[in-house]
Amino acid sequence: MDKTGTITRGDFVVQRVTPAGGLDETALLALAATCEGASTHPIAQSIRAACVDADALPTADSLREQAGEGIEAVIGGQRVLCGNTKLLARHGVALTGYQGTPGSTEVLLAVDGRYAGCIEIADTVKPDARQAVARMKAQGLTTAMLTGDGQESADAVAQAVGIDEVRARLLPADKLTALEDIRARRGAVLFVGDGINDAPVLAGADVGAAMGSGADAAIEAADVVFLHAELSSIPTAVQLARRADAIAKQNIAFALAVKLLVLALGLFQFASMWLAVFADTGVAMLCVLNSIRMLHQGKQ
Image: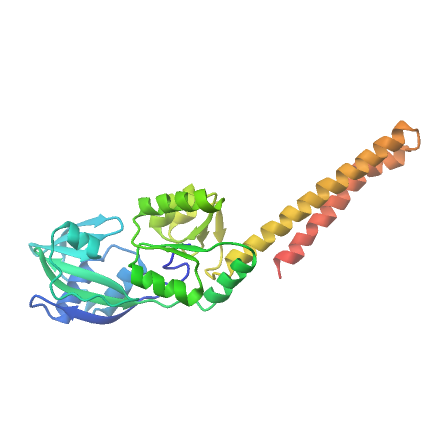
């Protein structure tokens, strides 16, 4: 599973703004909001919502997104980096004065190559997440979280809901690599996600499932789309799939048994025309009626 929007609500709220390098909180938030202006990610929306005067934001001369890292922008002639530690490290920015907060999601900013501050954002776990993960384990499934967020944040969420395995700080391509590794060790994999960065791994999974509230790219790449964003949709879907598989096997076994029986009776001239009709049309109708049970089970 992905983390943000799948296991957690994706309803981020800015908790603390820690400026550095001479900027105040308002100016730091304004730079971050400008960088995130074109993004639909929940973190970007929370930053824009935290700005007191969203109409007075500076205009970006250019914006370029770095997948899994953040945004590079030119604002008022200044080169601004807005993203995670990977983005700033790749550009050689010294994180002097930065102290990460375990379990929180953080957006770091740098202006003209100098660390400018950090914005801490909190997300909440979906209320049904722990119960849903427990149901998955009861079904014999192994759960894993693949996320681009920091290790501390991922570990905190995994511990809260009971996830078995955690892979953090992953780029979209890294998620696909992690999926292949899990498949090699565990077998067939169902992946559930909702973001545009999840599209490659949704397409690469044995079964890709997207939350209906997710990005269009994720929905297009998925094999299954859950109409609801509740995590309980996953064990419910697995339960229905197993029931459907069991009923299909019942139908096949019943149909073959009856046809073989009638065939044997026919060889010894004990089968009438009506018995042959039953073995064909009658058995087909009984299999259909047996399958209709799934309509009732699907509403439970």
